[in-house]
Image (cartoon, rainbow, N blue to C red; front, side, top):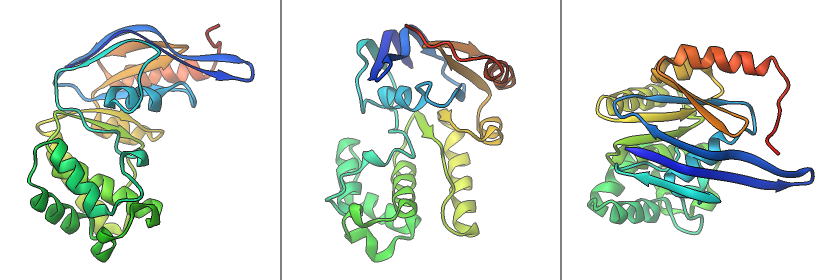
Length: 224
């Protein structure tokens, strides 16, 4: 279970503070995979990072009664001065996983070869995505946070990623941010629209997408 309790988040801009979350209270339902939908800059990725614990809200509390992944696609999850193998070992220790088995699984799945023993800062964006996906799939999470999940590599590797991810979803929930509505429809059954600092839940992802499309037809009215 993930619960937001009176959560607020804003950032300073040249035009004043931009409110992303405005005293939001919401409990994510278990057994549902939720599409997080909103305008560009609405705060979707920021919300995922708060849920994952990478950043803190300005006020309020986020409670997690489940094993929650870091946002897949968020490159900051890894320490750039450490090698891929060292990062994998670090994650294994956090989650109580055998370090040698973790490195073996990640090396095999990611197909990074000798790059597993080079600093992550030397990786291309595609290599970082491979490492992130492989590490995430090597650990069991109750809830996966997905921020613009991007298939990388050749066709065979993309198929492997899709098959592995689908197998994980059989026993886990997903909170997904994606500009690709086909991805949202494929992986999510419910929707959560973030608009003007507020969250609105829809039990059917199609209803959430319809509301978002309607929101996009009118001017954005930022919170003061």
